[in-house]
Length: 134
Length: 134
Length: 134
Length: 134
Image: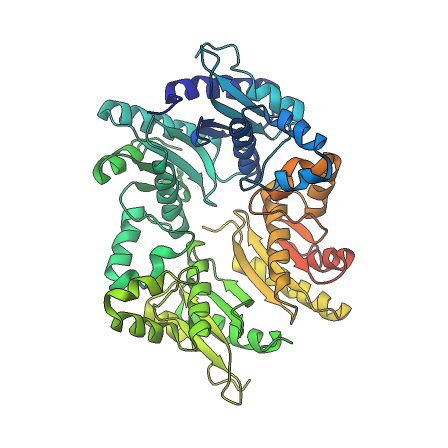
């Protein structure tokens, strides 16, 4: 039924929580399935404004099929017309930290978003489970 | 900073996930802090329509300071059409399964909501961590 | 420009806060102007779910020009078709506690809503400033 | 129960209303608790479009744990289009005038937002109660 299993989401979330604790920053991490719907989520004592950042990063990635920062590059390249894009779909988040999740066949099955650190840290934390075979 | 820590939320979520697996039903479980903001969440391969059920049950509990089914009794007792209470706060969920979380001092620090089973199962799963001293 | 002055709202709010303290219950009190827009508000340590109750009671009163419980009677009398009414305008609240505010000329200039006590207490608190000449 | 008491909110609101009257401009002032929920509010005969400015400034501050203008600096520093941050959480307000409220222990317990004057005036009015020991 679901394109991503909770078991898969839980593995990825655990890897990202572990990485966040290693780096030592409070972040929010959200995982969405192929339809952009929340599968798992953890807020490591971060301010609550960051919840929506993490969810929107993950949704931005899966709804366009590319990492959130790639979508940011696409929109930035679009020039003045890009203003409309950022406001679509209840608001995109195009800063690094929204990362596509692929299964063993290379299919996009969801995305993971992280917020609370620098853009580079957020991307590193979101990508922490990338080597796991799903 | 936060009124509930992620450590506390993770303990409760683990207890509820374990209970759901024992019962063997796919549910969604959401934990919110004292302000009603998401702390942790797990969707055990349940349909995505249930996400909002779980979150709204948890929010309904903490925003009124009583379990979601107690709020349901209050509203049912109010008579015809519940006077619109059910439509407030972006929609209440007053079915069993939204359970107040208290700390060691007996203070309300958040709530946990579960949806996907029968009302009785949802309440049992949401309450699975009740004996944990936070 | 505004049909109600802050000075007027502040007088009424003070009278209602005083009455709530006399009764000794934590309530939320909200005052809206003729356009249904918030003028003044006080939450006396009540649970945050009650904020929307108080605001919706006040809005329900001024948007139909009658106290919230009168609107409740009208809707109850409408029978099955009433279900639609309660869902309009982002949700009505038709329980007692939303009271019309009139100026010295008898014109409706706003409304005050109270929630947190029994319906009777809420109405008494909301009406506490009724004798003040505005 | 609440992380901020109404007594605390009322003291801060009174200080800000006094300051606004000294400056002589009609503003809207809103105070939210740690969860971003309204505690007290006063609209000094300002246009009603300003209500949402004041509330959003206060919410922006507490949901990120910094004054609204600091959040503005963070977002401005993020470069082009702010990557959509401004659209999160139902819309941030990052102009000056949203000020964090701390208790005697230095903990964030809420925020106060003011709108209707210049950004500098709004910040001055919102900060008027800063010296009060809560």
